[in-house]
Length: 112
Length: 113
Image (cartoon, rainbow over the protein chains, first blue to last red):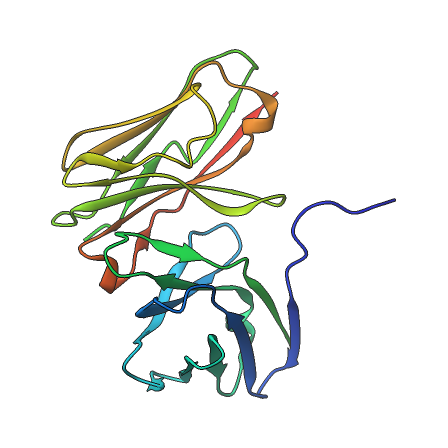
């Protein structure tokens, strides 16, 4: 039968490999971007952010890249671990909007 | 800090009943957001408050939904009467600034039968 609901992009990686999760954002005026991680049964959790005057920002095992020309954001996770399995959301903020707009999310599965 | 606190964690109710979800934001955060998450629609913003004042309620699906923030430390989301299609996980989030990201609560899983 026909499936209903959002068809979230999925990414399956082997433990220890690097992961790259992509996000296309919608508004060229957005000036702040955030990645969230949502584990099963929990609320989304802030991972890392980047402002539009930057094109790269690094955290612990995570790096966010911003390409404003094509309105593309990516999250790189180094040495992916089973605990990284989750749904990852990108969010964009338009100046003076007072709120973030969330993407649909990508499901990351890490195979041991 | 205990983070954003939501109650109850789970709620099962019969169609037609009133449901009240509660949220305590992080102290000092001046923005509060209510989201609904379903498999069909993903994460939807229902309403948000800034300094206890509702700023944007365009995401509230129907008049059956209402939200209040009587003070800086408490907010409620009420559904009256509830319907099976309201079944979802409802999240509350707070922020000190949109440019610092949100802190989400653990959510309330609502099931309307």
